[in-house]
Length: 120
Image 1 (cartoon, rainbow, N blue to C red):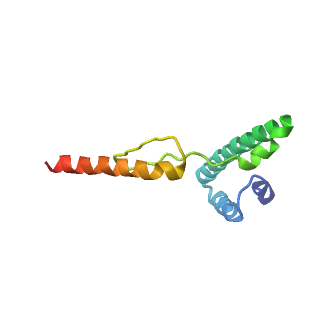
Image 2 (image 1 turned 135 degrees about the horizontal axis):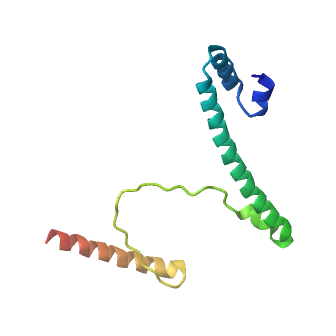
Image 3 (image 1 turned 90 degrees about the horizontal axis):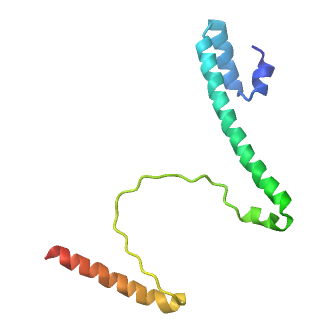
């Protein structure tokens, strides 16, 4: 194996050293596993680059919307396990100052009535 080729393929110097050691020992299974891992990483990078390409192509087609790129979130959604919980919500139209006190009072009353009905 040539170091220059492995470097071009994106392997770190540490990985290259391990590959050369594995080659000298005839451990081609280790080398194959390393190559498959790098292939999977490369495919992920290609997917990310394709998403970037699509965003940039869209921005180029819509000259007036280029500034929207600066407001975009590029984080991937994360699914998390959370414990079960009870949730209470209320909605009201109006200004924050006018409605927040009223809504908090109504929610506190609802929670208080739940607690007293549980103890009975």
